[in-house]
Length: 113
Figure (cartoon, rainbow, N blue to C red):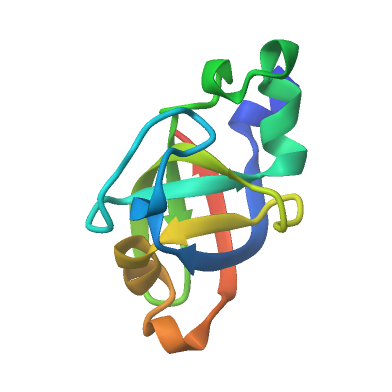
């Protein structure tokens, strides 16, 4: 799995409100931050003994590129409904990369920094 850290991934971006409570990484955030939830397929293999708070990808930075622009986000959560390559972005990050929140989802590429 370590080889995937140098890959570029393709998927869909969605958005969510991050201020609803603790993330899978055990942290709390405001809706103004540039953060993201990583899909379970890529998040779970890095979770030791089933404790997501200790996941080695927590707080790792990723550069996300979409049709409207690019943004650097911090991975702080897990997206169980997302497919491999997908990210669930905070609302401000989604606006930079995809555009209006009403779009709902959009195509992205991203890589670890």
